[in-house]
Length: 84
Image (cartoon, rainbow, N blue to C red; front, top):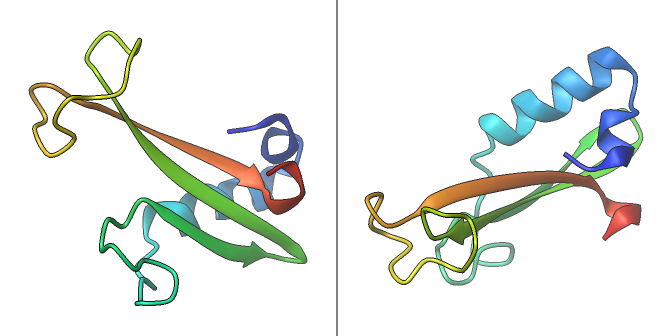
C-alpha cells in the first residue's frame, strides 16, 4: 500500500484491504480485457484504486507468462486516487 493508504485511520485501512480483497464489480467499462487486475471503490469519502502487477519470481522484471504461477509473482498495490 502507498503512504496515503497506510496513513488512513486503522478501520478505514482495514476496510480498504477487505474491499480490494473481495472486489468483484468488474464489467466491460472498468475491465475491457477481462484481466481483473485493476479496480476502484470508496472507503468513506476516499476513492481507492488497486492494481495487480505480474513480476518474474525474482521481482526484478515483468513475468514472461503472467498466467503461469510457476513463473509469476503477483503484487497488488492499494493507493488513494489522488496518489495516482
